[in-house]
Amino acid sequence: MSTVTSPSGPAANARPFLHGPELAAIGRALQAGQYGHGPETDAFELELAAYLGVDDVVTVATGTAALHLALLAADVGPADEVIVPSLTFCACIQAILATGARPRFVEVDPRTLCVTAEHIRAALTSATRAVMPVLYGGRAVDLSPIRDQLADREIAVVEDAAHAFGSVNGDRFVGATDDLTCFSFDAIKALTCGDGGAIVPRDPAEAGRLRRARLLGMTAVWEERVRTVSYQVSVPGFRYHLSTLHAAIGRVQLTNFDKVAARRKHLWRRYAAATIDIPDVVVVDLDVANTVPFNCVVRIAARVRDAVHARLHAAGIQAGVHYPPNHLQPGFARWSCALPATEAVAAEILSLPFHPDLTEDDVALVTAELTAAVAAETAACDTAAVLTGLPEVRR
Ligand SMILES: *Cc1c(COP(=O)(O)O)cnc(C)c1O
Image 1: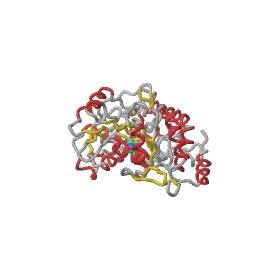
Image 2 (image 1 turned 135 degrees about the vertical axis):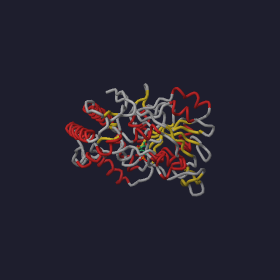
Image 3 (image 1 turned 90 degrees about the vertical axis):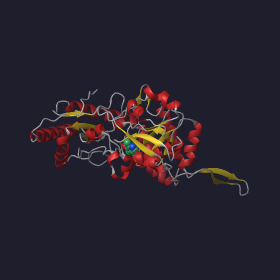
């Protein structure tokens, strides 16, 4: 693939990928002189809806803003509870708290790092107003076993699909399954606007409410007196719109998205094949046939994980832990609870460098360093390394 990014290599854990025409597109948008919500934003929304096969898409400034507005659209507010996995980016929790509601943390399946319908069913209370499945790594979450139960209790599903643009859920794209789905287009997501986000609304009225809320609650009104357009503020709102400059980047990214999707699948399969023979290492399954992989996460016995992480770092390879569990964060201590499976798996996970600029040689280099690091560290341990629950991986 052609690229205008700086030299590639395995060093970075994640990085933006540009196709090239983004530079000209942003130049045109700058010269057009309208930098706020503008024609590029409207065009991007239509193109996103066409790509996903949905009626409408509402863009916003960030994925976090998308989660916040989607929760408000689902009527989440003070006194309500939102069920969310602890193992996610802290943005989920901050979006919940911003509505005045409280998070109810749940476990994830250690094989997929995603919540299951059972986890959610077990956590439902009379205060539950919404559930927020996180599509970890891009993998779709199937809540069909509890869909009727949630609908009967008027509990909304607000999907955090920040990792999952382009993934499929059954025979439809993630976002086309009638939930409130939120995407992120931040720097390291598979489709980037620099910063950006989007919500797939459930109906046209909801789309209208989201559009008002993202632009300070304003609607345009015609002032006959001066025969010009002014505005009226009808509801509370936020400055959450997607600027036309960011949308211009996103439109180029969307046009070229299928190339990036194929590249990410290819690199993930390479990693999966290259790590299969490393003793004491398993790759977290993300159902690659249906998923545009956001990352490549391996599990390594907890007693050696940090030492392996440090060895990779010393070798110039940036691995990472995604994510430190939120129920253990000091800022979220009030809502903490016992989540032993999450704590166990969080001590095993390591995200390997993963972005479209990686070459097959890079993947080989990372896996060679990983093999050596794990071998050195397990040899230094007297007891055998044991992973919690043995995953099955579809390659
Ligand atoms: C990136 C991300 C977000 C937030 O998106 P921003 O665009 O960075 O605000 C939320 N959840 C997850 C899982 C993410 O990876």
